[in-house]
Image (tube, rainbow, N blue to C red; front, side):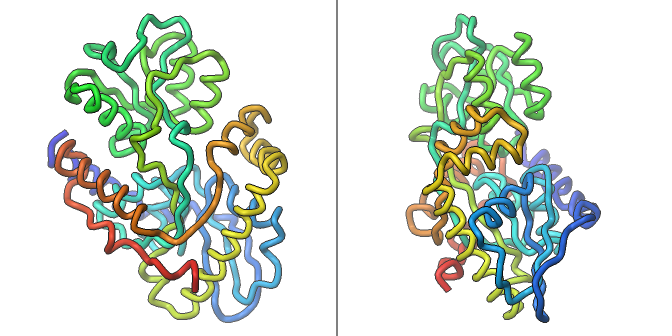
Length: 323
């Protein structure tokens, strides 16, 4: 991928922000007071966790929830000012930052490296990453995703350049259907789609263990941080989110049931996801910064995915979670 393609990705990301406000229709409002924050969410999962853990009572500020189907539209909404916070994976956040999104990282959680993998169908003759040479590998869902990084790093680990395979990009739902019917030789995927495929017999060639970075993060808009009232409300929200995540860890079966209900997945798959996720929350530290900077530099300098270098330390708000 060349720089002109990356510039096109940047334009596409920023253009998507123009429609972000429309995605917030139907948000519920709560709380009282002069300060009001709009909290981004995916599949209503964060809101549900906070509610189940008893963390939505006694708010001294108003809250609306903006629910989105994935990280890209959620980060577009953050960039457009439609939401004040956005939970997302680490690498989509890098892509957004490189595209000019004005965000800061305020909370992080490191999940299991097993939550992303390169997989093949149960009857596949492919037994190793080296045997992917000359084959088509489908990445879900786009350049700059955690799956893309996993594939590139797995190839690099074996001394293979990205050109050793033909990379195709498909949305997870479409790829899942094609994989199940044997139309995909190998698939770089993550999360629920991966867990479901493994439950149906897919074999893992390489998971993300040792490749990383493997964090989920909570980002905050720079505009919201500049407002003292919103900054204080978001600090309180982060503390409540940490408490809710601690509740999930202490009550894994209840969390798996909650996850299954919100996503519509089988409870057995939800238990796997809950074990992978280990949903703690902490302030971004030096280990997080080092891991994410390594990935950012590789994506920019080696793989030419990012249009410019991202300085990770400048994205971090280290003290908001502990405020």
